[in-house]
Image (tube, rainbow, N blue to C red):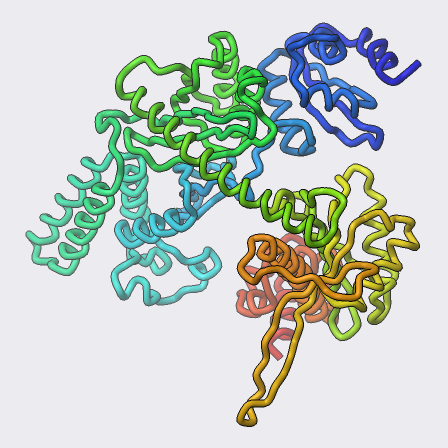
Length: 616
């Protein structure tokens, strides 16, 4: 009995209730997660002959070795579970959001006595108030600085605030109310916070009216310094409002407009964000594995929306394309309401104001699709040049680069950096802390790294392995691959060519990247401004950066621990608590006895010992 026949028999025992199914390959790695109203019927459809099955699904079926399922109480729960499992396992055949960073938000820490404003990339249920999402971290920092200065909100850390006995410079220049020393009471400070949040909610007329009234009141009592600051705040708000695109100045609801555009090369999904009638911006997500002419939007677009709102703030209203049928939009609405714990509308355009948002979102999707495809085609051309120059058997769509780093012969570490289609895939980056090496040994170091890497069958095979170094490093890795019986893997090393000449007793140095190949005497070179060279040097530099960062982190951790090792009464568990609470030795040294003794398992005597030891 072949594997597909076995799976068909296995599926016959599946329940007909709603749930989530997990498809696995031979190594038991989850390669696809799906949801279903009827588990048996949905999973069985993968193994039935049909013209409607997409090429991607046919390829998926060839890699399925086992299928498991999880029953849920209803279809809404299945949606919620599917999104969390995709986020956790990152299955290869699922539609996945591949942003290096989540959207930035503005967070107000409302549980604090005197709340502070932060940039946050995760929306948590921690009692804080979140605003956004925004499309640029820089614009968020600029907005936070504006809020702090305009509404006199503190920007200091909790640790810094607790240890102040007089106002800092920020207060002296008129940018903070100095709650640290009681120069502003809790109620007044909270009113400032409310005004700041009202501004972000788009209630600008109310905020401006309140600021003008306060300005006039300050002027009436001849507090001209305060009146001048309020005047500056009014002018700053008016300047910001001039730059914002207003769709509906009477709207008080939060809206997202989602549209898509693409062809056989992939599809761009655009999320346009509007808050209280003002457009904050839009962000594009390119999905290369989706052909909108073949794939059903009811499947891939709904999956995208479900995953997108796993991490992002859910607005009051989401405008979706008509390709998502009524039944699916109603189900999606129930899912989002369950997640947000509030009323949410998922609907199509039915008035002029909403239509303007949708048109704007679609135009952005078209523009971003063209930009991405143009850049992608440029990368493909560069990869073709790499294939030709380095005599590779296939297009190097996946390039892996390794870098070994050590400090005075100790703590040897290695990095694995992966570029796919010419761009970094940070999900595939790996760090190795070498276990069998003492001292400097290039051969043994590389052998351990590649042995550990190649033992993972679930990773895609690279079409090129790149090593930083000249012929010596190339020979080392060639021998390693031969010992591992993997000479089939294409390999190259790169190093700078250096020539020196004296001119008027000054040393002049010129350099050019050279690439060495196994079995070839002369190196290969690229044009200095070619996109191919930029890709190869970028992955080399990224591997070096990644290794050095890891090495520095290990050294800093070792230094921090060693500074605490000789303190009597400070065991491993307490040391871990101390390290988790403070960021550095200096932070511990500058802490108070009360702050250290307040930690679980600590007391005043131990806190005094720690500070005495660190301050010697």
